[in-house]
Length: 115
Image (tube, rainbow, N blue to C red; front, side, top):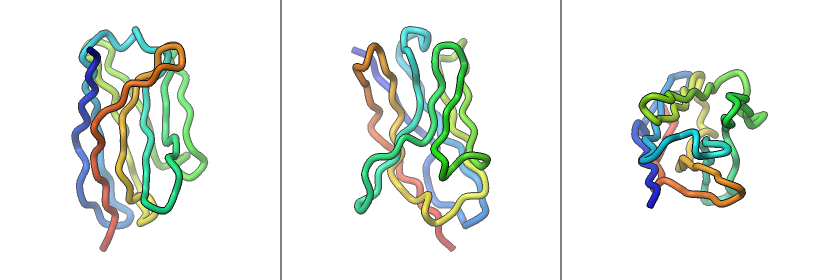
């Protein structure tokens, strides 16, 4: 069974940075795409960033220009670099892998942006 394990969440000040990592238990190229969603109590789940098998990246408009996503094919990891953080980035962030519209999820990691 595929496992995705996130790490790197925590507390950051507005304007600060955090890096989230997701370790995938199998070859990352088995997935059509991998990336990150986030969820808050008062908002629907939002796709934050994704990278597909061809290396094409997509970002939510709310994070475009501030977040980057990368993939380490040798280590089977996906990294979300979050810069210029805002309080509205506070959420639980979930790593995912998608194979033909079947999703596998990580357990989630809390990101809190507050002064």
